[in-house]
Image (cartoon, rainbow, N blue to C red; front, side, top):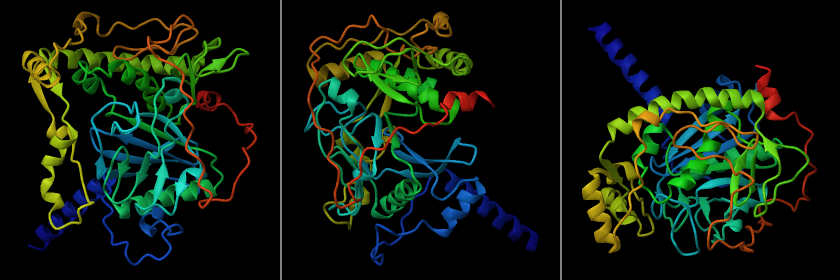
Length: 422
């Protein structure tokens, strides 16, 4: 009997450990915390850092996945590779999958953003907040507008990524410690979903597919290197980890002559072959099917019971995966026609025979596999109707940190040279 009890305890401990490795709910009571801005990370979190060979003040990166409702903290190890140290369930995000386009559309941003100490707001009405940096250079070049898009507490969103107060307390501490350690900017990567081959096929009918293909190039670069990619914008498009030959990047102007470092290009090609095989398999799996992306109201309905007994401002929105559904393409088209009062045009499905055919890489673009999009070429024309908008970037918060002058560019070893030595 004693052995049975020990076995049950061991299994329970293993299950709890596995759960904590994938998702941190962090539902601690924060009402007793007097100094929320300086509140330290827990001893358990610091022990996990030590186990993963991370310095307490080492750089971090933040990744967000809307559909899965997940926010991840990745932290640099002593070998300069990043590893995931925490993952949280997002309490509320507004709108549907897809980027923020204009003020008031209730959409939460998607893209690549740089966070500075000035984006930290210790005096937020929503417990604590970190400005996402929207609109960035890409958003401005494409005429997108919006202000005060945050990661904050209170579990209530109108274009933001809202966490519980306990969660944002820890996220804020991760960012604070990284800035204290000397990190100048923290990269925020906000995606509609984990950009796997299956997810790309499942969402192949979305009007946002071309935009998501562009984001996927940056996603792939991180998956291959486990280092935040160097992000630039030209011809109103994102470009990642590109070496230039004497030119400079301008968000709305023609891209300079650029190329992908050979070692990285080879690694991306290998990654792409594996992706192509998975994509071909997914095309067969979802043949004749389309994914219905639920509205915010439909997501809220799934978690309506969570609001019972809570203050009115508490507004969890639920998971897109739980509220959405797979439908036959004909049923999906009829539903979209009913919602939009127009005849929808479904994106043609790529034949399975060509799904794994690699696309040739040119000196000005990274290798691209099925479901991705090429990095901007010098012949790309601006999209019709697009104009450059002079939208101001979020202003620095003078209460967060003392005003800082723009730092001199660091003379650091390019990441691809560091990576190529391994």
